[in-house]
Structure formats: C-alpha cells, structure tokens
Image 1 (spheres, rainbow, N blue to C red):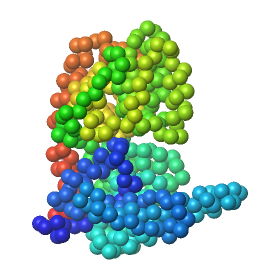
Image 2: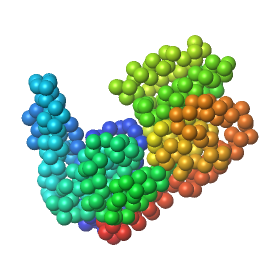
Image 3: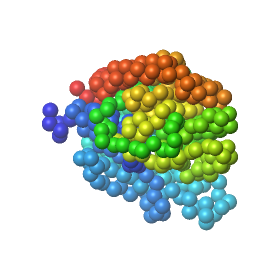
Image 4: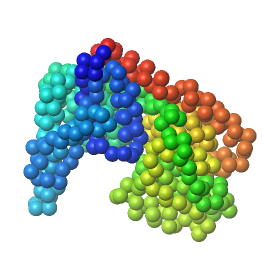
Length: 398
C-alpha cells in the first residue's frame, strides 16, 4: 500500500521537545505504525502573543512527517492588567476553544480518519473528543503517566471523564493505570495495556562516560521533580553517608525550574562527605552508556507507569533498586529482577541500596534475570504486534 493510500491519523500531543519518556514513547509508537497508517503530528502550544488568541497554525516538516503546531495565547497578561480577576475570567477556556477550532480545520484539510490523543494533559483529551465528535470519526486516547494520575485529582476531571466516554479505544502503560481508568472513569470502549519497549539498537554503541567521581556510583536518571521521588533518594543517601558508607550519587537529567530550589536545599543539607554530581540532560541515544557507568541505578518514583529508566537499567545489566509505585512492579518482580521498596520510605531505600551493594551473588542473579526478561518481554516486536492488533480491532487500519 502506498503512503498516500494509508489511513490518516491526527496525533495530538504536547509541543515538540527532545527529552523525556513521553517523547520517546510517542515517537516509537508512531514509527512502529508507519507501514499501517500515516501519522500527522499536531501539538497544542501556548503563545505569549495576545494576537494569537484565536489560534495560529504553523505547518512544518519534522522527521519526514507533515506536522502542525497550534498556538493560542496564554492570557496571563489579563492577570497583570487586572489582578482582581478570578480564574474563571482569565480566558483560559477561550484558549482551549481556539485549539479545538484550529484542530478541526486541520483535520478537515488533511481528511483524517481518526484522532489519537497521546497524553491526556490538561484538557487535551477533551479537545480531541470535541473534534472527533464534530467530525464523526473515531477517537483513541493514550494515557502515559501523570496525565492520568494528576488529572483525576485536578480541575479537569469532568472533562477527562467526558473524553473517555467518547473514545473508541483507550490505551495505557500499566495494570495500575487500567484499574484507575476502568474503575473511576468507566469507559464503554476497550482499555488496552501497551507497555513500552526497549532495544539496544537505538543507543549509540560508541558513547562513553567517565565515572562521575569515585566508585561505587549510584545513578538516578529523570526529569527531576517531586513525583520522581528525588527527595526520598537524597534522604536515603544522606543516611548512608552519615553511617560511613561512601557512595557517589549521579543525577542525570534536568531539574524542573520551579522545583530546583527545593532540591538544592536538600542537597546542601547533606553531610560534608556527600558526593553529588548534577550531570544535566543526557541525550537519549547516550542513556545506555550513562547507566552502564553506574554501579546501581535507583528509580525512587512516587508515581510511574512503564518507565524507560527501569527498562534501560535492565537492558544495561546494571542492578536496580526501585519502588512499588504505579507500573514498576509490572516490569520488575521484587527479589527476582531487582529490589523494590515502598515509595517515600527512605529507610527502606537506604537498606535496599546497601543490600544490593554488599550481596554480590544477589546482585548477579537479579541482573541476569532482569536482562533475560527485558529482552524477551519488552521488545519492539511485541509492542508493534500489540499496536497493530488494537488499531485493527478499533477499525483504524487494515
């Protein structure tokens, strides 16, 4: 089948960025389905220009794909001019309406046959549902992590429920997420788990890193914010250091701007013997080499779904200590592929790190078991087979 003959799917997502698990996940999904559908990426972006209130569309080529960005004003200037205005008067709803109207226009011009919302942040899923309803085409929603966890406790719960009610297919990354969707949002369509996959061939085989300080090195890789559990890790690391254990702690990834002050205070309060390296952002293709530079990797998350940092540690054959949060137990069985502790328990985390470091036979057994599992269960072929199956069952491709 020629590319022009494939069904066209509008892929609604966040603004284009080059970092984060959601970016990797979306790119991999769309690439896997290239022979079955034509994905048209459309991002919903905020503009600082007041004149963009009705939605400004930018069309461009990205990775060989015809892509769009819809800009709509953030309206924060309204608060500056009139600080007495309440949230309801700040025109945020008008911004979302503008996104929806421009999305409708693009979908009509491109003659899309379905809309796939990848990541239900803010009201993105509802905007997709609104457009799909007026166009009378199927809607697919993929929840990837905090887009679900934060939304059910946030101010967009009603819109999330309505969007789910209008979907033909919902996918998520873990059994934990599926329980939330089916139990709280109660969709009438199938809810399918499609976990992330990992493959060695997407990483640079020539990438190398010098050790960050003296060994042993504890590595944690993420976009650092509270939900990642870095404060728990810093507390555990402080306790290990105060007890005379000498580890280097390597933090790979950016800190969220509004939270960096909180974490810097925690780092500054560590014992004098502490050795913390803030490495900054690491290109994804070099991530495997970065992980392999560590003696133990830590995934201290409070909430997660199918985290790449866990799968990549398993593939890198580096011992893993994680938490029982979200979908992590779907990937790692405690005492079989890694050690898992309750989220937020710094004492348990410190004990697990020390145990992983000192019990070499346990370490070797867990590493080999983790590598065997990740290379058989979380492969690109399995992820592709699942995506094709659910798309076909939903009538989105042949």
